[in-house]
Amino acid sequence: MIYAVTILVSYLIGSIPFGVFAGGIAGIDIRQHGSGNIGATNVLRILGKKYGIAVFLADALKGLIAVRLAVWVAGSDPFHRNLLGILAAIFVIIGHSFPVWLRFRGGKGVATSGGACFGLLPVPALIAGIVWIAVFFACRYVSVASIVATSALPLTVWIFSDGWNSPNYLVFVLSVFIALLVIWRHRENVVRLARGTEPRFNRK
Image (cartoon, rainbow, N blue to C red; front, side, top):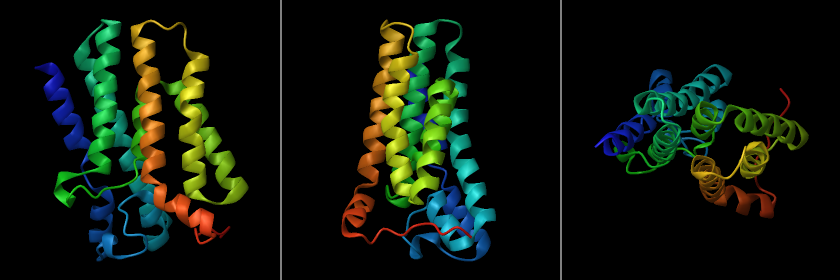
């Protein structure tokens, strides 16, 4: 029962569309502007830094809250803490990417993945964040930074693992899932990168 509740609650937390709320406050439907995505990047491009940063933090907080809530419910047993935390991370990201309220058309999951990872494996998540910043400032492509950072996540989990018992193995599987999902959600960006039409962020 606790697993089903964790899955449902995490999905519902993830499906809260903060990007849509930000657009509503600004008087527009963010889905009708820019890339049409409800994530922080499109909000930032269309509505500016104030809204973009707020949506990024809110989306990341969704992941963090879902994971920490599941870990708290699990108690002291390390296996169940990891298992419930991993389930929460997976379904909060799925909720963000495929919210039922928006006909399963949500964001790309980068901020929510970051928050979920930080709640469950803070050191690898911090390293992935540093990688994101370094790649972004090197190329000014959000999509490239997101793909590279999430691709580095399984490697950092592997490096910082203290042995391949069941909990650590499951965390590694989570990191691979996150990397694959984020890459798949950026498939249109990859096509635009190949064509040379992917927009950069300028330095203003």
